[in-house]
Amino acid sequence: FFLTSKIPGCGVPGQGVDLLHCYADTKKLFQEDLDLLNVDYVDLMLIHFPPVLGCTLGCGAIQAQWKAMEEMYNAKKARAIGVSNYCQSCFACLNKTMKVKPAVNQFQYHVGMGPDPIGLISYCESQNILVQAYSPLGNGSPELIHGNLTGSIGAKYNKTSVQIALKFVVQKGYGVLTKSTNPKYLADDIDLFDFNMTVSDMAKLDAATTPAGSPSFLCSS
Image 1: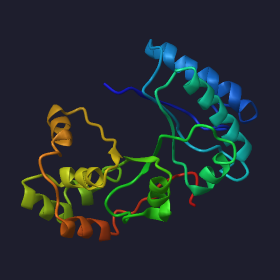
Image 2: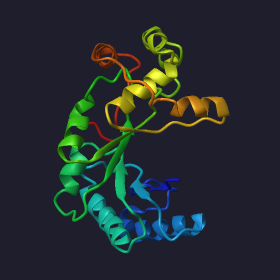
Image 3: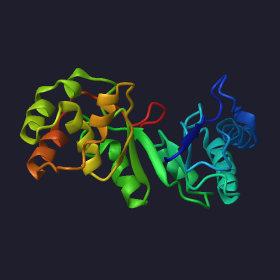
Image 4: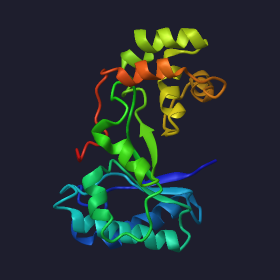
């Protein structure tokens, strides 16, 4: 298995990472996660979202939190560290002081958002940061679960609409996150690797404009 955990961004009330104690609280929560999981390290630890102040006003918090993450990484408490919901303004701040580059940026991405929403995918690729897509079904959008576009493409490959929506992300080389409590759906969700869609079908999915989505709920550029 591959074990991932997350630490909240700084300053959100009740999340355990105080804006004025971001460095210390991040290290504390990191170790608490390991203790709760009863492990010495995780495969990947993420910062769940940017500071509540955003990436410009909250730049100092971003840098303090990432310093804590780097120290835990160097202490072999994680095999990799990364971020989630970070956009370019967050990285502009982070790049000024970071010593270890984030391995992953996890953000919302699905059919309907286009090939490169807000330029974030091309930015991550230029920095060798892996894109990992959450909400690949658009928060359960009927357009992706039962939609005409994904459904008609799926019929060509004997795959479901959901499998086409997931394959859209996977075929681009990105990581994808999905979940289900239904064993059949779980099996379907990993049955993605015995086919590839044509360039034409991928282009149709890239051109879709619904359902809409935003890569980050806390920053936009």
